[in-house]
Amino acid sequence: MYDAIVVGARCAGSPVAMLLARQGHRVLVLDRASFPSDTVSTHYLHQLALSKLRDWGLLDRVIGTGVTPIKHLNFTYTGIEIPGFADPIEGIDTVYCPRRTVLDEILVGAAREAGAEVIERFTVTDLVFDGDAVVGVRGREAEGTELEFRAKIVVGADGANSVVAQKTGAETVRHVPAAGFVYYSYYSGLDWGMHHRTGFGEQQFGTWPTNDELNLLAIIRPRERFGEFRADPERHFQDVFDDIDPEMGRELRDAGKREEPWRPMRYPDNYYRRAYGPGWALVGDAGYHKDPFTGWGITDAFKYGEVLAGKIHSALAGEVSMDEALAENEKIRDTESAGTFKLTCSLATLVLSPYYHAVFSATAKSPAYIKKFFGLIAGGYPGEEFFAPHNLEQLYDEVGVPAGQRILTEG
Image 1: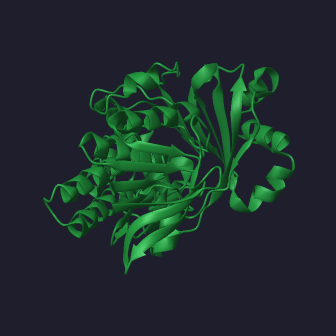
Image 2: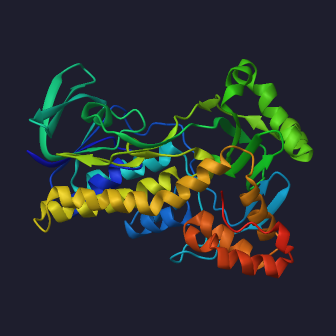
Image 3: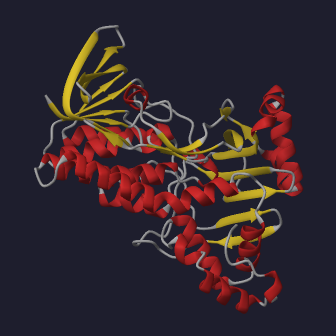
């Protein structure tokens, strides 16, 4: 009997397992993949995510892989240009975008080092119930051997298509249709730094350096254009860069060399699922997913994985009931992620609402508010403060926006 079984060993599952194992709990981690292995991802680690890695003793390992440090961001949205970077957050003054082949192996290794048992290439096919309560999992090893494991709590960290969510019937409590799709790959020959640029005509490109002196280049387009795009991705990818920034488009054509196959990401819709029930909990994309536009997937996996591990530990230690612990975890997740979810869903449409257009146009004219903007993006400045009407009034006063053009609230 395990204290906890974690289904899924990537950015949400391994931290949960590691933190529980460090508290002395008996933990089993199951994943259908073997590591190192790749998965589609934005790669982006916000400063908040890096502070978690530092606290867990893993940041130096990530930096030691040779991933390029980033200290300046170029954010453009339909003609509004906001270059800059956030002030240090918990001492972190740099961001990184490591390959998932690198990051996930470090996380899985840390879970093992903490004492968690990890079984790779194991596919969970069903849950074991005692009445309404989940008491374990069933699945098969790569060789086909069927196995069953029991635990006091089963954590689904197995992504948007979570088996744990499906088998428990976890209810979707909020749903916003996906707006776009992503195509990306890795390029040599470019030294662009980090750009996040949305142009007119519902198109966006992003560039950021990663491991092995490569740059990840990505585009986002509306979902209904996916079929047309995949018919000739090379041409359409180049077209997005040419349309948004002709100079960068020329450099891509002349100097950029694609080193790996295309990675298309036709993301699922944005949603919150019920995060727990008798004997089970969800974390990461299994419980809460939003568009990749703001790159918050890994950071949220770390943040709420740490919260969940702490709540499960308190229950296993007898401080509160498991139901109370998991209910509090869900409350924290839903409350603290609401602003990021709302902003992401809006920006991902690739068309600014009048409210966001007014706010960001004013922000671009204020060096002080630009710092707050990047603090918001990095997770160090609360959204409720950034968008607070009294703060926006001060911003509009500072940059001279006429009273009739000021929008203080959305809707």
